[in-house]
Amino acid sequence: MVNPPMDDADGEESAHLEVTDEGAERPPRPQSSKAAIVIATLMVAVVLWATQEIVLPILLALFFALIGNPIIRLLGRLHVPRVLSAIVVVFGGIVLAVALAGQVAQPAMDWARTLPQQVTKVTPKLRALIKPVQEANRMAESLAKVTATPNAPKQVQVIAADSSDPMTRVAKFAPHLVAQLLAVVLLTLFFMIFGETLQKHSLELVPSWRKKRVTMEILQSIEQEVSRYVLTISLINIALGLAIAGCLYAIAGIDLQSALLWGTMAMVLNYAPIVGPLIGVVVMLVMGIVTEPDLAHALIPGAIYLGLHTLEGQIITPVVLGKRMAISPLLLMIALMVFGWAWGIVGLLLAVPLLVCLKIVLSKLDGMEGWARLME
Image (tube, rainbow, N blue to C red; front, side):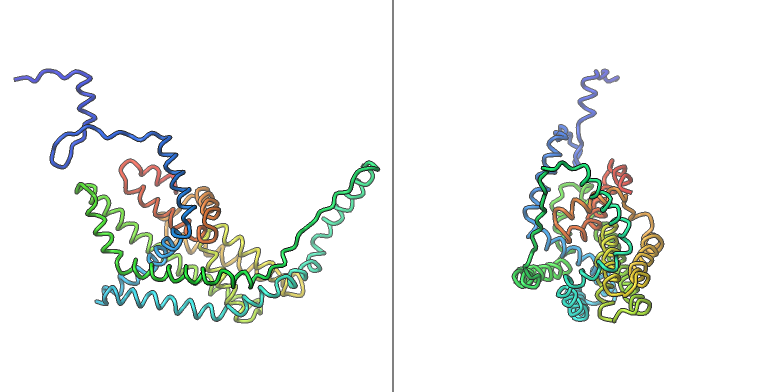
């Protein structure tokens, strides 16, 4: 018996029907409009900005947990319980951070205390470099006097100086800072201990087996690849900081504590690509001009920083990570601007890991692979 032909309307209707896991057909879900998606995205961004006091400790804890997860997995292969591994990793990191802070705290306080006086030393040393600019300014002033009208009012620029002590501001916000640090430490420990359990329970909320499989692949990819990426970048940044500190100590003749201070600064700034190294080069140039007697020696710290960063950014990191974790420089700059504006320094540190997470999610979703390639 031949089935009657199906008209176009019935064909289109049946083509849009969805089939569930049990084989029953159901009508298609309504699609959200692009305007609704844009509005929802803006609302989420506003909420994240308004609740940054709560969101930032959680994101920082996830960031540190991703760094420690490969170490915890390694200890798990040695049959060390996950709870004990998490405690060892967290408190080991705290001990290392406190030891490093103890080495760089005194030179950092000395630089913060004497910075206004040190900056005044920059002007005489730069006078030779800015002499052509000064001559051009004198010529412009002479031309302005010739062409100015006799009754033209003089403009007076008033610059208000901030006489507040930086140490007083730090002491004012110290209790809040300590509370935030404790929250980050506790959340990091809990994410390391209960992260796998939370992941398994979240899969139970997914309705179908196919979606559970896709969700599990996404979560595993984010947990493994991003943790490997963050740990690798952290090791590279630590090596870069040690190399810069060693070169400043051996080549530029800077004392060991100050060299460790600048190496630590380079390590932290390198988490923010492009922007961080640019700030680091400027700081190194200013430091060299302040501390060195002549201009030739003053350029050595900046040259050391720029040379080692170029070696790390153009050769070491691409070879270690490969193209799989590559992010478009344009998209990276936009993300750094957005996250830096919304969350400050913490946003600069978290911009790249968040972009990597987004790229992994897009690469695992059907039909979104093109967007993942667009981010490369």
